[in-house]
Length: 411
Ligand SMILES: Cc1cc2nc3c(=O)[nH]c(=O)nc-3n(C[C@H](O)[C@H](O)[C@H](O)COP(=O)(O)OP(=O)(O)OC[C@H]3O[C@@H](n4cnc5c(N)ncnc54)[C@H](O)[C@@H]3O)c2cc1C
Image (cartoon, rainbow, N blue to C red; front, side, top):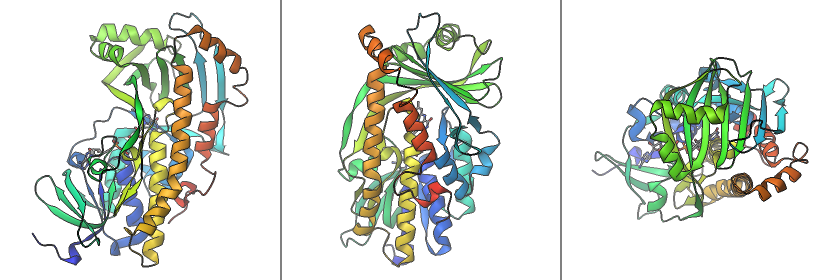
């Protein structure tokens, strides 16, 4: 099929996860009907099945409010009112608390909310429909800049062909779009997996998040509405596989050994799933008529719950870059426009990758000597803790050149 120029989409986004859909809505909202935006993802016509919940920091919450999505999830969003961090062996009767923090990112605004990924995706999809984003429930099978250099040509599974002035890779950690563009990633696997499940408990958590640094890695209890918590339970990969395959009763026992009984009786609910953990950062965030966002650009350890928040910073920076360019009559896929986006996001991403990697190395270790070193260092922790710094800095989101959406401003 030969496509006319009028058929050319301004921005085509491959991947309708949180990052891809948020970018689509931000662009339509900022540029209106004269600017066409499409999202292609085979998952668009399926009910969201992601069992995870995400800690959404205040800056990301402001972005969701600015793009008209926050109201739809706010009722079920659980504010994180304080956080305790402990460091112990699995067999320790008492887990010494070495770090606590509470408070607001700004007066009246909790530093983070727990939001379940399923309802968040559903709210974003509804908003994408309402703002006129074109939705294609198909995967991107091929993509390449056209010979003229004026656009990118894309084939979807099912045979449809599209042309766009800019292609955005939002297709997750194993991005096929990134691979086809020949952009390598740098990083490593940690040999760990995060087991995710939801737990119902007798007593309310009072909005408290807990992170227990056990020898195999962090075990996080993250508060949800209705006396429930989301569990992110890090284990070495083989052990995670074993635990995941256990019959319900044995799984419950392993869970209870780590969770404890401080919130009364517990019960695992719904799906349990394991996610391999690694640190992967793309060598470039842009290519010819191509920009990478979210996990397609970077994957970090979930130790500080910042992966999606970083993806939303990409969304805010790229949306602002494209909107500014389009208002000046510039081509959104032009090299100079994309360079601005890359400059904006690369350094911050590297800094967060290094910070979460360091935390994981410090805490995921069975050595008692390292534990002692940590304990000594941890005397300082309440004053200058890396974890605390990450949360507070990211929650406020007010350092450096902050994109408008993260300040809650319209584009
Ligand atoms: C256990 C765990 C806990 C986490 N907790 C937090 C947290 O508390 N806070 C936080 O900020 N982050 C957290 N993260 C990180 C966060 O989940 C990810 O960063 C986030 O989901 C990435 O979103 P995304 O939209 O970039 O990619 P994804 O969610 O991976 O979406 C990619 C989309 O692309 C689609 N796709 C794939 N291939 C194609 C193709 N060829 N064509 C078209 N579409 C395609 C897929 O169907 C999918 O819908 C956690 C991660 C893990 C593993």
